[in-house]
Length: 246
Image (cartoon, rainbow, N blue to C red; front, side):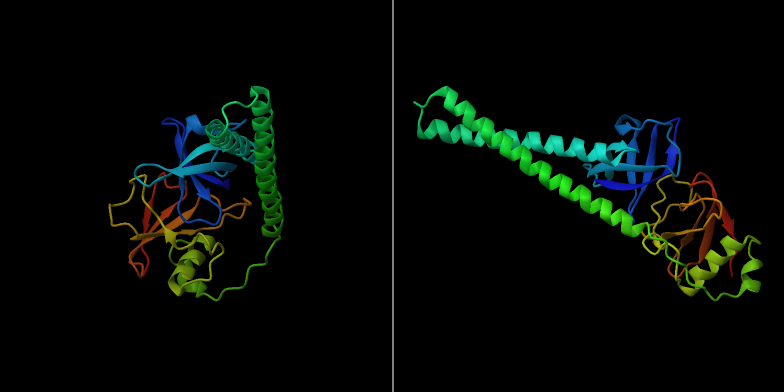
């Protein structure tokens, strides 16, 4: 089970991408895997399971707004699989050792094994659930941001937007960034809105939006190492404008 926020959603084509907590690689999801009780919106908090396809791309297999439902569904499926495997394994052993036992005794024995397997899986997954809740409680503790020294006169001359210019200044001086687990991560250009480059050429950085409590939709994408080109998107990669940065 993973968590994150929807960073891009194309309602016409029925697919989008999830900005995963504590992971730089985004996860693709399709409308067929969504179990949300409200309209899908960018910035929405979601919980999901994922797996890699034949092209080694991460795809969400189930997306929901309820963390518990994903865990219970996963636990139930795992319990059934474990119970089925235990049942088949022991069934073969019993047939090989003694084919003359009473069928009713066999049934009771397998029922007991199934019950034990279900309890074991449930204890494991609900233990993970408790740990996840505790971790969320720790992560939600507000942390004050340090004061950064930047040349405000030079930064203001770039766009005139305080948050955008401050982010550019941080990129040029190498941080520190407000989202260290996300800022500076690879931008994969999946939408194809920027010129095609080798993987790892583009990096993305968060431009804070004062009116929202999450990362928002604004990003600066740089090209090259160190950056030689800067792009600004205000709408989750739907469109870009090139910035003239010295």
